[in-house]
Image (cartoon, rainbow, N blue to C red):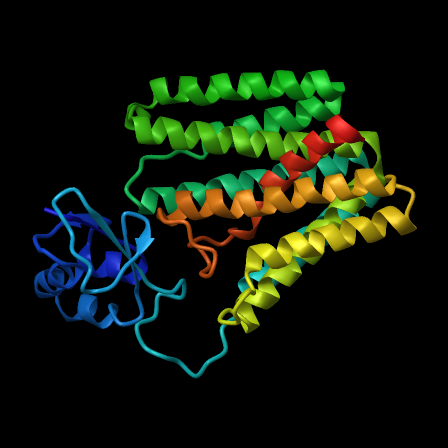
Length: 330
């Protein structure tokens, strides 16, 4: 039978994150699930997006026994319209994060490392909660240790300390899957290792950049802040305009910001600033893609993925990419 994967309020109504439901089309499967799970489930269906094997679909799409149907409601989880204005979580998160990094960058390397590690650990725990809601066993402890080891290694011993902390962090993650029997599945090991490594690369990389120069951190904060703002504007106010895409907007703004900072500041030469901006832009897109897959399966850039710190998906990968650009071209 086809597998029906459920999220948010639909998962709560069904009491499971995935179920096997018979049917020859998506509509047949959804109707059978509605009869099985009741009125609360049925009320959540009109606002849900339908995906089959990672591709957009509708009720007429045929399905076979090996197909996977995902029903993804809006992030708010509501089944009916509301007249209240939701709190703009993502812009507030971005502003708070950027403000914290700016202040910590101006204060000292110690405070900056502390702020970066705190953000990395918070991101790890946020991902842990979302991954568990999808039915995949996960622990935030090994990923948090990897983040702390990489960032503090970079703080204490520079590039070699960063590499050593990253290597030890990977060993901790793998050893944890042996110690904790719940994590001895390929999904749990793969997701835990990948997220731990990505988090360690991002936090350790940006800490190493701060060890080099405060101006290089300011460059990163300025570019990712402008890119995140441009992406949010397109996603919030112009999602249906042809040719406009949040990822394209972020990439274009990173290139413009990098060029202008290269021309009017002395942090980098203009060619290096442009290359660094390219790496940051690609990191933001790659991070959003990774976060979308981990948080709810399909790759979606027009909807906000579940979780409180989804914006950090792009920031963490962009920090790792920026570190690579600094090493290669800086």
